[in-house]
Image 1 (tube, rainbow, N blue to C red):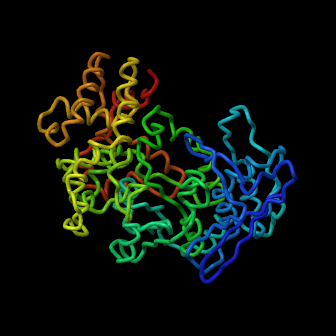
Image 2 (image 1 turned 180 degrees about the vertical axis):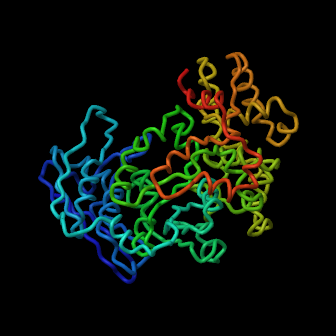
Length: 481
């Protein structure tokens, strides 16, 4: 049996998983599992696990919400460590029938055995007297009030764009207790208003490998606050690339099959849907939505940066800086200097080391070879997604764009452009256009996303046309050839 316990210690909320297992399921001092996010590495959880958030709920939290929090935090482990086909679970408090039915559908991916079927989940504390979270929200909703929305806010390109589309939504940020965090500082200093929360947690440090145990753990803090804030929806900033293109690899029809990811269906059934309002915009367009001064000096999109700033060494920073430079017309080196300058440029002993970070960084250069040159040598499409392909093609064929980027990038730009031309060309206009089919993701909810986009983003929507037939075709056939 898997048991969960919740406690409040000194104004901090704690969760713990207790596994009462047979001898065959017990291994050393750790619970082992596979991170439920590509590339699905093996991760270990100390048996003395204790997930905490530096937040004391005014309401202890609807039991359905706490059950979801337990599952997204720990299911990567207990689904793997129990060898039997059935898992019995006891949550901190009895949950609703709706929530139990939803949780019983959870799917666990085991990369070592792709034929493995999901284990049967039995919840032993379900009560028909507990109304679901969704019903509880309806009972507590004031007639005429607009839907209450929480944005799981990292401070990066995607969630910042969502903030500008829904400026009155709650911003809920999770700060890693081990690191400084620039987004946390901005929220603490009220730069994003009174409806922004930054909650310190050890959520990314539960495992022996840094990071969340599953991609869905990004909504953990939003879940914890949802009962207090009476949230009806949780928004993610996910763009066209992550919602429809599997991060640039291949198109899948998310609006025709909105529950391709089982977690979306589970949250919907419990009564707190996860929605993606930026799904019709490419990363290139998201960068246009955000004011330029914010784009250059306030975004926090790096997982490993020192003092909560972007490291400008990792692949994620590189991809974001390529986009930001294209939109602002400023070299990457200026972006780096700009961000450093927010504290005190004089504290940097050798500015040249910062300016040359990408040129001398082994990780970025190795990945450029892996994702660009190796596929080209095999006569395949570079596996960097349409946005970076588009930017590199522009770097090679437009002098005013080329001069923005360091010389070492020109080699890769030329290789990409030459290869694409040899393949007969590639129409990438769709990344500059709005994918209006994405509004279908909202059709069953009380949110007219198309109207909101046209009203709140009128300044940019005047410059952006919706896709037409050829653009739909080019997008929807991405990765099929």
